[in-house]
Length: 433
Image (cartoon, rainbow, N blue to C red):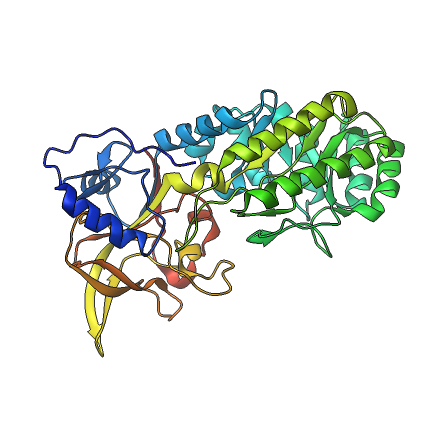
């Protein structure tokens, strides 16, 4: 589903023939980025032209997240999800406090992966009843914090059961728990597979009878199951198949549980397009599939509430990374734009955050959005390493020192997923507009 552009009337409209040429050029490289408007050659983010926003921020590089686009994405999901299914934000995708505060008011719950994220979620006024805590290496001090806060803890090992029994007794509070299951299947086509085969995540399905018995003996408050097979998937059929298999697995495990299943997290995995040839997800079949499962659950798991956990899909397309050109140089015929940001701020765009083969994110010259005169350039950062590459031999409008390079699809796994202390360069800023 495409996000609609923000309403904007440009004072100097670009001729349609020029727009057609620009669109044709962009289509040949990446999926178009229609969510941001353009005014007088400049990208518009959160209702502000890029140059004015940069002046307001006071420095480059920076990340900017458009709150209108965030609201629109959640609303679009609400429009296709069956009634009664809860939507959770996986804040590891973007833990910026202001953004989490906005999301907490839009979604039904927050999923955290550390005590640090738990603090941000609680500070954002997320209700503890709707916060879940996952992660394969929870320290005892983190488990104690989670029990004291009253959030749902996704158990991922036998050790955690023993620790939670002791903590519950110490605090005189019964730990609320679900079990993260490592299923015997994978999410086909996922960018990152987080279930199936040997994994550090969750408890193998073969071990579930023993684990569920141990939870019952420990007197923990069992609430349900968490199944997360993978992420960044653009195949609707694979997502629907994983949801069906996850539901069937929960159905098989339910009779072994020490209490009725109240919580069934079917994961997420919804991807967004980054690279040439990728298309946006059609959510309609996913909504129809979930509606069928929810109808079955009315009789098969009558106490269960379905949860869909999404991170990247909710915030990824609403963010951009902005850096300024500080040098322009030619080396043996190759044009390099040297910018004041790089992999230390945006590891994903550099290709060093899980890509097997490096591909370019969608990139633009943010103050020359309608320019027709182009050249093939590489965009590099200031770090003393050849890995500091943000765009490799891309066709972009001719840029000069002082122009803005914009990387789209940057709302997820950006600043917090990057080594900002590397080589001692300044950190970037983040703004919600």
